[in-house]
Length: 78
Length: 227
Image (cartoon, rainbow over all chains, first blue to last red; front, side, top):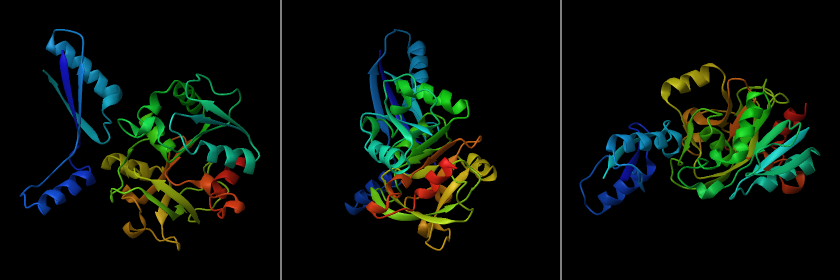
């Protein structure tokens, strides 16, 4: 199954990239705030049970994909 | 003194480490390819060098932390062996859970290379015992991700247990946000684990210990290790 893991910086962790992009958007006149930049990871995971596939993706997050000091993730089975 | 310098694809300060430990200090210094599974027999110190291991893919140090040699480096640390991680080496030690916290992108978003001053916060470590608490020394930094970050409760714990080895400061030793080049919490430049045998730091002492290269500020760390 296709799985999408979205990794975001935790609230409260400074995101200078997000800040720079926010300032850029302001420069174009867009009204926007709280811009945060994250990472999107897509993969094919064997299995047909969404709960089982989600559990596997969660294990991958814990082992490698996410650094819990600064990041959190959400998992979506497509 | 026998030193092992693990070399990852993308390490670029491994030769600085080899020069500092081997040529300047005269220690038995051995480069160890990341695919090896054992450190050389009787290794005293593992010097995890700076660079861009695995191209900084995913997060700085995240992939190197999984390299085959890391299991033996963890075993070495668990047995009380000395481990020094500099720059990317510090990032790798954090990702490998040998040290707490993480190194985020510099507050300025820029790669910074500069000479900075550090204050010795803890002088009774194997890495600092030839120095005095409060002593100031000058060493270079060269990094884009040196913004040390830790959960506030864990940060308080780190400070309370004397886990901060070095802090950025002015040339006179004053502490404050003005003297922190990268946004690191509490101006932290280097930390040690609970046992005091694993130290990670963003600045490069190994690049400032040969008068021929114009700077000797980093010698204190290496003199400490040899004493």
